[in-house]
Length: 105
Image 1: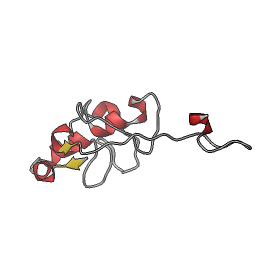
Image 2: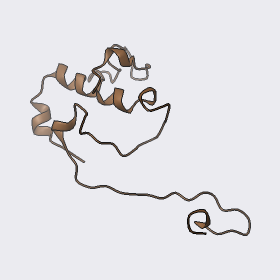
Image 3: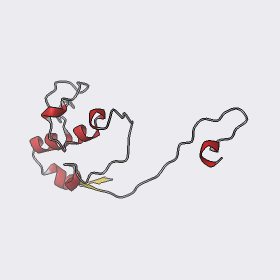
């Protein structure tokens, strides 16, 4: 993903914070006071990045990073999709088994 910083930087601070869902100066979620405060999703635009990727908006799923479509995100106008990847993570190896057996066996 490539961010069009020239366009992004021309946006007002308030708009940038609305798009992301965080206060730029502190990193706090909109409506919060500290970076690690629990986000109040009701106080954010329904398309804010933080709101869309939060576990409460994803059936409780917590992932370090995930593939994500910015088509319906407020970030959409500022990013360009440049690549993608598909990954398979095989389960652990049981004694006498081999790596990938759960996928290939």
